[in-house]
Amino acid sequence: MGAFLRGATGGLPLLAVVVGAGAGAGAIVFRWLIQTFTRLLSGHADYAAAGHAVNPHVPWLGRWFVLVAPVLAGLVYGPLVYRFAREARGHGVPEVMFAVARRGGHIAGRVAVVKSLASALCIGGGGSVGREGPIVQIGSALGSTVGRLLRVAEDRMRILVACGAAAGIAATFNAPLAGVFFAMELILRDFAAESFGMVVLASVTSSVIGRAAFGNTPFLALPSFTVHHLTEYLLFALLGVLAGAVGVVFTRILYLVEDGCDAAWRGPEWARPAVGGLLLGGLLLLLPQMYGVGYPVLEDAVGGAYATGLLLVLLVGKIAATSLTIGIGGSGGVFAPSLFMGAMLGAGYGNVLHQVLPGTAGPVGAYGLIGMGAVFAGAARAPITAVIIMFELTGEYSIILPLMAAIALATGVSKLLSRDTIYTLKLSRRGVDLGEGPPRSPFAGATVQTVMEPVPDPLVGTMPLATAADALVRAPHGVLPVLDASGAYLGTVTARSAAETLADTADAMLTVSDVVHLPRPITTETDLDEALSALMAAEGAGLPVVDEDRSRLVGWVTHQSVLHALHRTNTERPIRPASATGHHP
Image 1 (spheres, helix red, strand yellow):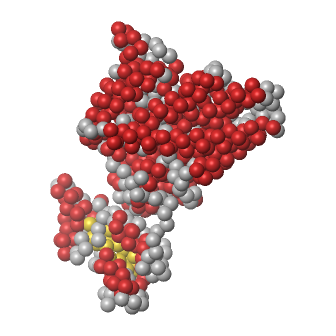
Image 2 (cartoon, rainbow, N blue to C red):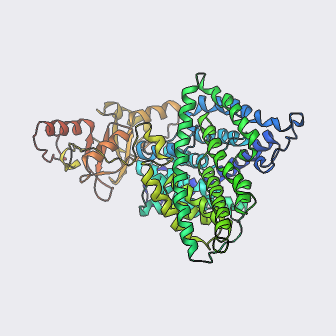
Image 3 (cartoon, rainbow, N blue to C red):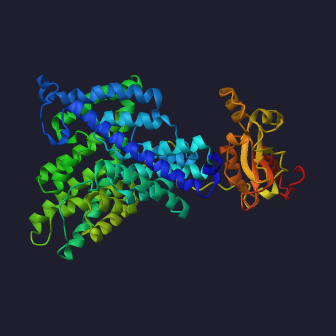
């Protein structure tokens, strides 16, 4: 069964469904954790909508309890993140992007558990962050864990990580299309047919589970809007320009505040969220609307409940509160805060237009809705995701044309003002450029056929693992290919995996096929650059070269053979094809 899931054509769709189901269940648990910790630490289902209400659990503290809630939450999630999964700190999406682009999709399984608890505590304790970043990281960690347990090839591992990300978004926000495009546009950064189909499967599976738990209704309840005058398109376009600038400003302030917190903090990292929680609590004391995600406040703003001055205060307050939450070491996403900012900006912009152009402006809420998508596009520079996610979150199709125009302009303005997005800037600051092309290679034009070695004596899949251990001990590279009884290629097995398995169990019925690993497929026409990358990601020090059908072995490639090719290239000797039946000269 494991070999089927790893290599068969039908194995990947089945894994996508499994990951989608797991992420859907994870989203249910995550939302329950947020609700539980919010009620425990604030005494309300959503304190952002409660004003300066008293926490019924500690009524003697009055409204001053908001000074304590972030500190208590930080005292728990700070040590949790520091001890078990430091990558769970922050908004999560950049870590997933890095894992897919640079680590073959490998994410530690414990990240899902730690991120769930840390983000739920942070949001429940007043952290002004969203839940999309955490659920993306949770779902991605689940997909990576499934792939790692089954030892799938690296290309499939990346797809499973994207499946987990899409499924998490789909179940949490009842937005299956948005989950798909978020994963394709931001995580995988391509739209290959195979990966698109698998991500859709995972997203649909997760959505079915999410709708069974949360119902089949749009995530945000907003009134219907229509465009009455063509002049409004120009007004929406100007909003898109402003929103793009706000998205960039939010990005810059977020990392400036994080740098300031890094420079100011001198204590142990595990205590930083608790101590910084005092600052966050002070801000929440002034603006309780900043407590948690803040969707009720967002809905009120789009519904026209606030005056222009208050909308401006809430916009600035959200930028400050989110930046401070992340800066002190909090765990949560930046998608929901960007929607909040867009709603405040758009509604305020609409209020001003109603005063200046009362007969032309149109509903204030329409500007708030379009501002939500445009600010997210300006911050994340993901226009397709922004359009789809706004449509699915609200169920509002009537203003799709001005929404698309504003989002396109916001994306363009963002690109003019900043090279990085809110997600890629975190990686750029570490020296990682996801858009950077590979450096010129000394292997340009050379293929695996020029350096491959003869195939070492293979193992048969039905061979007892204890018997195969002798052959693995003698293998010069600690890895051997595995064939079935008919001679078809199954994968590879390493001395390390065999030794670990035999040490863990005394089962005499174990065979080589029980520990076989399917590495990334390498053919005679594969570039040496790609072969070297596959070797670095492989469990052993050698890789099989297979035919175009991936069913028969035709050669073997090792670090030594690639190094030999590099040496000859540097000494300006041409690389000549080597025979698959004799050692490389």
